[in-house]
Each structure stands twice: as structure tokens, then as C-alpha cells.
Image 1 (cartoon, rainbow, N blue to C red):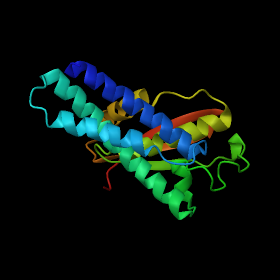
Image 2: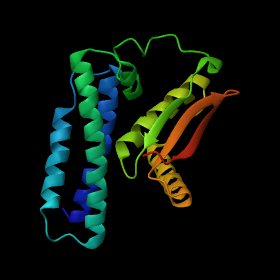
Image 3: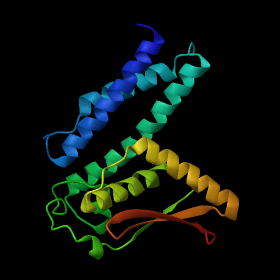
Image 4: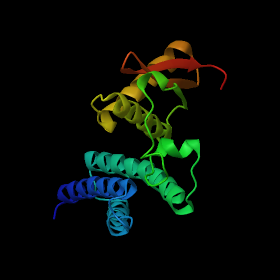
Length: 192
């Protein structure tokens, strides 16, 4: 198998891992996908130690490794919430099933309060949390859901523009529903 084929296999395994974790956290599976996760970790480690990668192959591997690190941290936090069995307002942001908030009566669009998130320079964990809030708001009003990758690229580009224009360190995003439409507002935060 060539290195490019192995990287394609790694990408496919990572995609499958994300799907299996989504199924697990939604309550469709009894145990987390430990086998798939160990396979992805092994592939990443093996290719990271490989000195024969070209520049483009190394770039692709680093991108996959970073995405895995972000989602791995998110999954670890969700697993802790699911194992400990507690429910705080912050836990609904992570969308862990089985703690009452999945089956709760959803508020009408007019009842939704705006949710604020502060995003620092390059922390992708907050982007995932912001995406979850947008998805939750869109599900409430019945709007179609977008892909995470395009959303993350948009947030990164918008945050960069705002930081450059206003010379600030952080950007605050607010998710709100107005007139049956989900709105994402961004503003500069100079107090950080």
C-alpha cells in the first residue's frame, strides 16, 4: 500500500470514528468505539514517525492529526459527562444524550435566549461548541444544518478579519433566533 493510500485509509477511518461516536452519544450504541479510535491513533503515530513523507503528505497528515486532537478532546469531555451522569447547563452545549435535555420540550423560537461564546485566537474547541449551539438553534426552527468544516473555515476567516480590523485579541459570537431565522453575530472583545 502506498503512503497516499494509507493516508486515504486514515481519513476514512477518522470519518467512520466520528460517525460511531455520534451514534454512541445519541444513544444508538452501548459502548464507545474504542477499537476504531485505537486504529486511528496507531495510524497517526505510525505516519508521524515516517520520515519519507512528502510536503503535501505531511500537510495532510498534520491536518488530520489536528482534527483528531480537537474531536478527541470533545469526545473525552462528553464521555466524562456521560460516565459521571451529571447535567449542568454547559453539558447541553456538548449534546450528550440520556440526561433529559434530548427529550425536553423545545422552547418556541421566540423563547430562545441568545447564547454567547468567546473565541480566542486559534482554539478549535470553542468553534466546535459554537457549531453545536448553531446546530441546536437550527434544529429548533427547522432550518437545514451545515457542514462543520465550512462553518469552522467561516468562523476562522471572520475572526481573523475582526481581530485585524479592531486590533483585539478575542471575538465574541452570539447565536440568536429572530423572526424564525438563526443569526450569528460577531463583535470584537478588547477586554481580554
